[in-house]
Amino acid sequence: MLMIQKWLNQHNELYTSATRHPFTLSIRDGSVDLSAFKRWLGQDYIFVRAFVPFVASLLLKAWKESDDDSDIEVILGGMAALNDEVSWFKREASKWSVSLSSTVPQKTNLEYCRFLESLMSPEVDYTVAVTAFWAIEAVYQESYAHCLSDGSKTPEELKETCQRWGNDGFGQYCHTLQNIANRRLEKSPEDIISKAEATVMRVLEYEVEFWNMSRGET
Ligand SMILES: Cc1ncc(CNC=O)c(N)n1
Figure 1 (cartoon, rainbow, N blue to C red):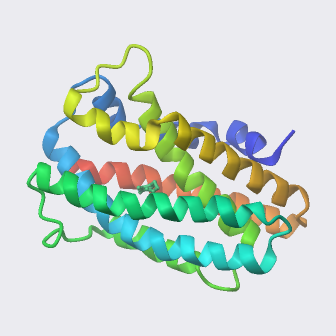
Figure 2 (cartoon, helix red, strand yellow):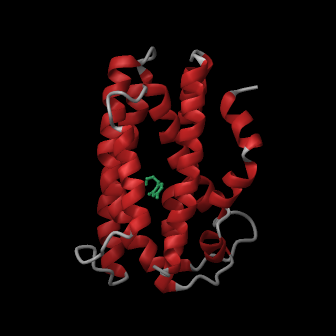
């Protein structure tokens, strides 16, 4: 069995808490509190700005370490999507009257961004970093695709947000990332596999906490 599938089975509870979080479930059933959505929007813009240099560092690792040239193209495609995403956040924030310049990063966000920064170190193996990248993207893909699936009552004004990460193209892209990660993991020694697994767990925990921020209790 492929490594990522094995981990998802083993850590199914954690994976489900990230991909079926009360915040995204509330979008899906239409009960979402719009102030929670706005809080998420402001915080996620800050996260995405830190995510760009992480992906740049991953591109550098792929160029130095990858055994397959097409990895670079996949990651570069992810970068291009982020360029578009940054513009989208600005437009969306103005639509919802969220001031991005006065949004203060919450503790969880700062911690998640610091964790990303730790993964940018040249000491971190390409296999570990690309596996983390897959996990970060996959949580959003699964969470938002669920908001568009059969029986969802997602409010019209939130459908574009769900489409951004829930569309089929993004799903295909996540699948490609998963294939890259599995290919690398198959060829990796035990210590790298353990590090990658622990990193995926950390990502999932941070993603749960990130959704929790939408509650605005802190
Ligand atoms: C906290 C978090 N995790 C994953 C993503 C999705 N990747 C890029 O947009 C995101 N925007 N925010």
